[in-house]
Length: 177
Image (cartoon, rainbow, N blue to C red):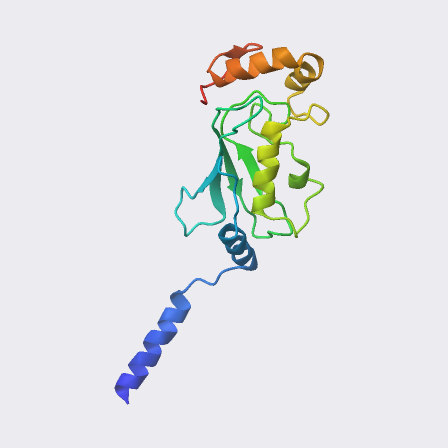
């Protein structure tokens, strides 16, 4: 009988030590398990698989102006996910009309067009699309947007220079190829 009480006490202790997952964590776990990333994208968990709410995505565009580059994005997922979009920052300094020099990303599904039916896969594909089709009509980097709109050949030259670790418009970039 005493052994039975000790077994029950251990079971209760295990239950109280087990961390319950929030609704956001459960949904994020589902989203990540169902990821279908392009072969030029990969996901890592710098703080380990126990912290699903913070991760990084590496995008290596295989076409367009940014072909051959490597661009790292950090994702911070709110406890209110999927009712709030994840916070996404580009950790690679980049010359891009839709990403400013501080790494803020202008992507409609991360702002006003976010809906709970969207998921991490949708966001990654949206980011990838920014590299294949940069949009000068909704810029964060107005200088890059103006060059893309008015002189696409100069824009291509500026992108290559920035990706090689050079200067564009008095701004220094780190090599990202």
